Length: 501
Image (cartoon, rainbow, N blue to C red; front, side, top):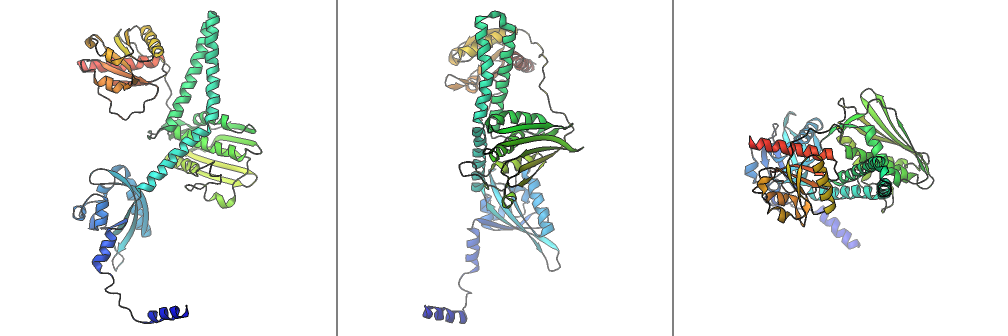
């Protein structure tokens, strides 16, 4: 060992010429084949030097990028993120940005950029270096985990959902049976059945919206209404020894957001509070108030175990959780923070071990009012001749009755192939199920080549990304009411008139 050490010491004392260990071209080759691409842009944001590795990530040659603006490599919807990163770099000398990149062929991937400001000897801004790394795999993994967390949240609520559905089915089945035994119960039973079915429809609609991937446009939403709906979902899954108290004192509660993510924020926070009180029980307080004339505050407080002070700073970090591995992924509160931030809000937490936790979510108020479902009857249309297709006899029967009640003539088919043998020119409108006899209503609509009218599709759940043909003018979700059907038919009739003009 001592001989080895003396040998190393001797080598260290000897002058070594490293000049020929790696040529400049070899270093350039190493850079171009690394996972990080490098470019240099002038103060106006145009590429002036581009390494091959950087250009290759974007599907260009280095020469093709020279003289181009950075904007051509970023989707237009992400330009604001890029501008914000450049502004931070100008202020602080460097900045890290995560955004999307668009390749020459139009495909998109996620990238992380390190922007480093460059100056001349007098300190004047001369441009910046851009170090780019493809982080698509990491982002895709995060998205899969977020989707898993969303489904896990729904799974956690399964008991409460089953409880609510059974509560809704009880009056439907009970009243229906009473009608068979005592027809004099018709008026009261029909109303009770309709009300319970409508609530069940809303419950299922909420679940489908929670599980889907697409982003919805933001609209004015009542925070109190969203909290009430979320509590209805989650109450059945809370421990039996937890008491829920609500306090809705806000005189203004309209926020600019999306209903499903807003409700999911409440559900996540309430579920976490219930988990903190599952052993010893306690009180869950949910309050909506106005801390100022321009804000609305949601507070969710529990009397549970509390959060250790060392964990408070990290609870919104990805994958960080104080729960056992089988109980949490560490993404629930991250989803809460992201959803709140997207709605221009902020979330904070206070906690003390053994005394409970309080989450506070503040949103700016929106001056517009939430949209309300109209109860007015739809305008009437002329009596139409309608071809109705559905492979479920019970659905076919009730739809026929509804259409005849509206004054339309109806011919029914359970098989789309048989329906196509009809003289289609004799019909004003086709209404078809979306999933029918192993095929799709979309495919059926495409085959209606001799039909000059409009098509309405109906389904329990539209989940196809298939392009809808031009003759399909409306899609209505089952279950629907007569007024919903009437509105869709009116739209189809107007579409037919527009074609004939």
